[in-house]
Amino acid sequence: MSGGPKNSVFTLLFSDEARLRELYYALTGIKLATDTPLIINTLEDIFYMGRVNDISFEADGKLVVLIEHQSTINPNMPLRLLLYIARLYEKMASGKKVYTRKLITLPRPQFFVLYNGKEPLDQEVMRLSESFANTTFESRNLLELEVKVININYGQNDTIVRQSATLYGYSAFIYKVQEYIKEGNSLEKATELAVDYCLSHEILQEFLDKHLEEVKNMLTQEWNLEEAKEVWFEEGLERGLEKTARNMLKIGLSPDIIAKATTLTIEAIEKLKD
Image 1: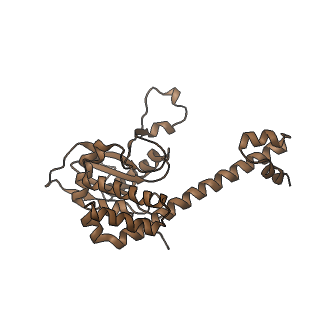
Image 2: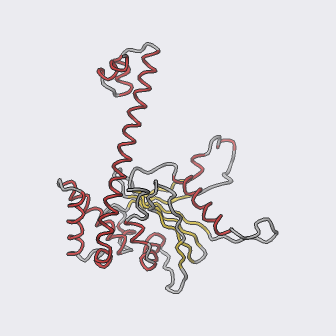
Image 3: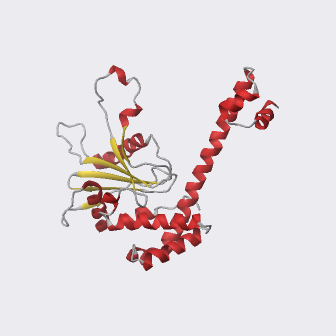
């Protein structure tokens, strides 16, 4: 799987202009006129090791960045979006005389994270200023970026999700895959069952008919990557606890106290002594 997939199911689904207009209406309540030009300008390979699950587009003087996020919400998302939008603006300003007296106008940015991870979350706004140190010395932030995080798991934020038939269909499809996996099916079988369910209930029917094999392949790679990231996190956490335990042993703390502080077993701590 060299290089990873170039799209996720999310980006394949919403790279269609009509579906993207529909999604934008669901998120903002603003309906873009059909004759309003919509320019998709997504950057490649920015966020997740070759897996592109973001979409950016320009319409009606706005530059909108959408991120589909499956795992635990990352508190550094505003910073990552700042780097992303800087790249987009850099591309827009390329070839223009940025040092002249003439003002270069830029589309106003909007940021959304569509979350379908496992941890409970409804909606929230994440701010870049939450990352700033020594904020007590300033009465205001001279640099700010806000991103709206919306839980699109099936049954969550229905007033938003159901405004877009495509977003609702995507939410239902992912939910059915998860349900069939819980029943003990393999990912491949769960995906097949979810596709059959959606087709029989006229959910994403046209999309699945056209992109069935792509969807199966993408979903397999997406799921494998999410599982890998969870394993990496758990392994990193375990290594961190072991390092802490070693340091506590060095200063003479007993294995009982260390076990309570780190949740490691007495046996694991005794092995670290050796």
